[in-house]
Amino acid sequence: MQIMLLSSGLAEYSAKVSSGDIEFPIPDNCPNPDCGAHHSFQGHGWYHRFACNFFDRLWQLISIRRYLCKSCGKTISFLPSFLMPRFHFSICAIIWSLLFGFTRNKSFGSLHRFHKKRLLSKIQVLIMSLRESGWSADVSCKCPIKKAISVLLGCYAGPGIEAFASKHFDKQQKALLAL
Picture (cartoon, rainbow, N blue to C red):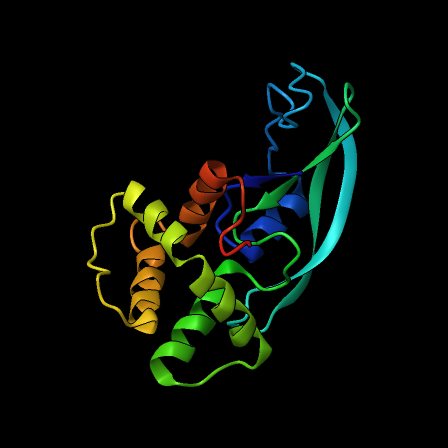
């Protein structure tokens, strides 16, 4: 089970974790719907994963904080908002590759093809999330690619993609572009 931790980007997150200058908020209640225990968490170490921000081709091993619910035994991890569960590329990199593929007719191989399918299948959910954030672009066109471009640009508008991804996760209980 994951909780999104609002974070500015890969380099800043890594620097803060390395220096110990980051606080991981402990939830008041267990997010497991079958548990919901109050103040039942204890530190449960870290796990490590690779992340890539794509723009400067920086592959970095980052640490993700975990906690254990003493009541139900489930673990939760604080995933930085610039990442999606089970994906190496940052959300910015994925959206940038989609925009580049749609507008320049160039793709980054499987990265673009894979996420294009996910985006097109989740377009209405993203439109609803954007509308709840105050977005007001016209997406009445029938062309799915033009609609997708408008939605991707909307994801970048306002407070930024990481903040939008974090709000979307909190509301939908799924990561951006998750099936």
